[in-house]
Length: 618
Image (tube, rainbow, N blue to C red; front, side, top):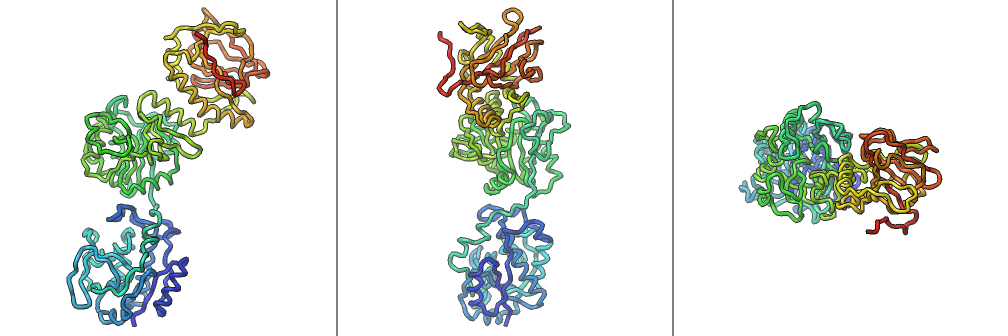
């Protein structure tokens, strides 16, 4: 009698009982639980990170790794005993009770499939019992000799692990992927009428099919920025900056250009293993809103070699818009500023030459539209969210940034686009990262870089274009002021109100836990100059919380001074905000301006929740 073994996971006690009844003389082999394995624990074996299921396109699962490792145990036993074995998996049923006699009748064969699934049509008949197999799936039941078992062991030791029902055909020289065939000439057959088969529903809850992807990936985040001072939003998340120490020849990025990014990436890829997964993010306008593990899981779920971000505008050549495939979202066009893929696939995609000054996005769009590569666009922002023309689609909650248009949480934010988008991107970054305040005194706070220098300069220009500086009537501490709600452009008021609700209020309420900040009561720019008004006397404000943002610094004197606390705003930079409780304890003054013109954005908050924003009567 040929020895029988069956593979069974320790946790599947019901299957153990069932198999022990069906095969009372069989040896139980404890199967390997793929979900609990790591790349260290399976050494000296390693998983094939480039493997793709030929039907579903997915990568190797944890269950498939465990299954192959389990069969390796049976092959080792076969070689150790130096005799053939009949191997069963634990989810089969017997179709021929005389299976032992049938196998013994043909024991001169090196390998026999007892249960199988033919994948390539009709097979050549050997005799009434046997046929010559073509490419065959399933390892639910088979007869194996030490000769074949040893070759299988040698192959798995010297090659990355693939699913068991893919590696066995490779050794038997019947793999449909002929590049995997090893050229051995074993005597093999399948029983014309299978002797065993998987039980009904065997694949419904199969670990090989349903378990997560084997995630033993070398995953690297790469960016490109020649000025790392502009990379504060992502520098701590990236593994390598391709632009560090590089003389930039890729243009200003205000128009077509950026080919140098591709060339720097090509150079880097040449030194990295093909199975490595690379995520590229632009240097100056991206940040991560999810963990590396989440990003990798989402990438693997695409079942594609490369995933590029998608945006609403076809740039740089609008004529290529109609060439892009139709999608169920408005994000239809490839954006090259963020992408993720394997080194092997990226090498292939970037194989054509590009000059440093040529446009990287046009280059990649042309490659994508050639349909030569396994590339997909992330049209739902499942990984990458391009903000250009999508600012109104953004929703931020306590755990996620969401693309409302696709109702999809996202992982990487890309502030591609013009000045308005860049401003929105900066605000979103602060909101997501829960901007913290810095105390200058116990209750005088600073928020660094609350607004950008460009925004400050634009606000000054808008006020000067209006040129309606004036004092409010009956103001006991009058200043030369212009309210933001009176400007021709409503964007400044809108931007700041958005910033106030999204960024400032949460930061203040974290610092002052009992504070319930009210809405903005007054929002105005005050101007100091030697000719009209050079100072402001000591006073309190009519607000709960007051704030002043330094809009420029090309002047001397004019310090905002808190004599009781011995604090000034002299150390603040353009765009920094100073914040204080406005009544009783914090009288303040603007000291005399000595030279130049000083501008400040002043914010008063309501003293009650009913108090609305002040508008001047016309």
